[in-house]
Each structure stands twice: as C-alpha cells, then as structure tokens.
Image (tube, rainbow, N blue to C red; front, side, top):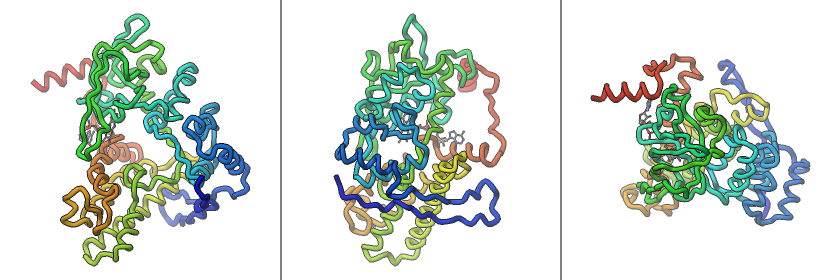
Length: 419
Ligand SMILES: Cc1cc2nc3c(=O)[nH]c(=O)nc-3n(C[C@H](O)[C@H](O)[C@H](O)COP(=O)(O)OP(=O)(O)OC[C@H]3O[C@@H](n4cnc5c(N)ncnc54)[C@H](O)[C@@H]3O)c2cc1C
C-alpha cells in the first residue's frame, strides 16, 4: 500500500458571496468533508488494511466501485459518504476498475429498469471490470438526432432478430456485452418505437470492424448486425420504452471532485501545464502569456462550477444551470489546454515526440490529437447549447417539422425531398 497522504480531508472550500446574481446562480459553495475519526473513514480504512491491493471483484463486492448504487451492488451512499470513499481510496492509491460504459451507462439503466435476474446476472461482472460493456447507439445517419435510428429489431418467438449498423462504438472490440437501442415499431413516432436490449458481442451475426483514429489508437468500431438473434430475456424494460431508458442513464452522475483533467476528466489539467511553464522558466511572448491567463481563468471557473455542483448534491438540491454548462465549458477548455501545449512545443510540435517548451512529450501530443473528440462525443457542443437555451434559458424549441409523423412517414418524406 502506498503511503497515506491526506490533502483532501477537512477540505475548506471558498465561501461564495451571492451578491446580486440571479437566484439560480447563487448557490454558495459550502461543505467540509468529515474528520479523520469519522466512522465511515474508519470502516473503509480497516477494509483496506485487510485488502491492501484489492482486485476489481473485491472492490465491487464491498460496494466501493459505485457506492451510490443501492445494496447489494453499492452502499446506497449519500454524497458525503461517496466523497469520503473517493478520498480514502485515493489516499491508499487504490484505483477502481475501468469500465466506463458499463459502470456509467449500462449499470444505472439496469438498476432503473432491469429485472432482478438481469441485475444479478450482469452488475457484479460489470462493476468488477471483468466484463467490459460498449454502447450501440449512434448510426451513420443518427448521431445528434439519435431518435431517428434505423436499426430494426423484429420479434420472432422468444427472440428478437436485429438488422442494421452502428458506428463509433467505443470498446466494441473488447466488450463482452453492449447496450443496444433498435427500432421495434416504425409506425410509432420516432421516439416511441425504440426498445433497449442487452447484446452479447460474440453472438453470430455481429461483425465488428475497427475504425483507426488519427491518434494512432483504436477505440472506435463499426458494428454490423445481420439477422442477429437476441433472446427476449435481454429486453430491458418495456417494448418501445427504450428512448426513455436511453435518457435515464444520462442523469446518473456520481458525485466526484476529481474531474479536472483536460480529456473528459482524465489526463493533465491547466494547473499541470502552468506548472510546466513555470518550471521551464516561463514565457515572454505577450500573446502566449495572455492565452495562459485565459486558460487559468477558465480552469478556476470550472473548478468553482464543480464545487457548486457537489455542494448542491450534498445539500440534496437538484443541480442548477452550472451542471448543464459544465460540459460545454470543460470540453472547450480541454481543447484550449491541448492547443496551448502544442503551440508551446513550437515548430517541433509538428513531430510526434516534442513536448511543450522542450519537455518530454508525455501525453501532450496524443491529447492534442484526441481533443477534437471532446466537443463531439456524448453530445456535440452545439447540441449542448441547444439544451441550455431551451431548458435553462427558456428560449423556444427548434421548429420540429416531424411532429405528428411516425418514423416511417419521416423516412418517406426525407426520401422524397432528397430526390
Ligand atoms: C470519442 C467519442 C466516443 C464515442 N463513443 C460512442 C459510443 O461508444 N457509442 C455510440 O453509440 N456513439 C459514440 N460516439 C458518437 C457520438 O455520440 C456522436 O458522434 C455524436 O452524438 C454526434 O453525432 P454525429 O457524429 O452523427 O454528428 P452529427 O449529429 O451529424 O452532427 C454534425 C454537426 O452538426 C451539428 N448539429 C447536429 N444537430 C444539430 C442541431 N440540432 N443544432 C445545431 N447543430 C447541430 C453538430 O453539432 C455537428 O457539428 C462517440 C463519439 C466520440 C467523439
């Protein structure tokens, strides 16, 4: 076990003056984590003494992977308890299993709508990281407008027969299971005729083809489904209720303080780049200095937004507008950090192995090439802004020319207008 450092305990967090801002923006940042003697800390420390290098399965069985989930899969932990567990695991150098789609999306949906049998069959394997999951949602013609998806699932006895194509399927080549949404009633409106399935990725009829990325890595895939048979027991929730379920998972975010990394919470943050600039003797170019100051201000704004979101969760309040704007700001901030780092590498930055200001390249080059994905994945920046304008600012909704039409009618009119 690594030495215990305790930088995050008894966190004193800045008090925010409410001044004359609108009420929605005025929630004060005001919480402290429980002291060293808190029984919840004592409990997890004694568990860590017994399990100094816990496996994913041990962490999952103890409820420490997703402590906010209900028992027996989690600990039904309130936000403070979640932060205490994060704090103790971090201090002990223990990392949770990495299964982002399984733990972040599939699990919460199975908890909300899965049968008991489905929950017991899948959740522990998913939490332990032993069974990786992927998400079969996007299609070549359906990304932002996901509800227009065309992959069909037709009931045949005790099975569903699926035909169609998915794209951008992260981890599809490593996953044991996928969450799949497919059209089960084309005569319903586009949102109403979709169902939600669990798909075993090594089933006959699935063809997974890699999409190489400009980073040099391979995360994405195209997934073709031809007469793929999915047992009826793998339907999640009710037939034609899949669109609602697809949205359920989006609202299930764990309370966390450690999400400052430029690449969706991972990787270096603005503080890391500033430290690197300082340790390299600083920069004299006034425009670059200005960009660094702007980056620092953005990072401070995001830090305060994160703290407010956590404060609201701890106080049992719904997240305010700050939660909606966080993704837009954080994704653009990630691109800002990576762009500055690349420019600081100078002409050498055109090569793959030059870091900022002559330092080691580390993750900077990869991060720069990955950064454009930040404002696309999980909903593009434009779509997030639409959501903010409608749900936060109360501006009118886009005119929906498909209102009152079934999915088939929309397809027919799209086809006729294309000719
Ligand atoms: C790193 C990464 C991982 C991903 N992983 C997965 C995965 O595992 N599974 C999966 O199913 N998908 C995944 N995706 C796909 C992702 O969800 C889609 O790329 C995203 O929803 C955008 O869809 P699209 O690419 O079809 O773009 P489009 O929807 O075609 O958008 C094209 C452009 O039009 C703009 N636009 C579209 N509609 C509007 C509108 N109403 N108003 C204003 N502008 C609009 C967009 O902002 C964008 O600039 C991943 C994407 C990335 C980048």
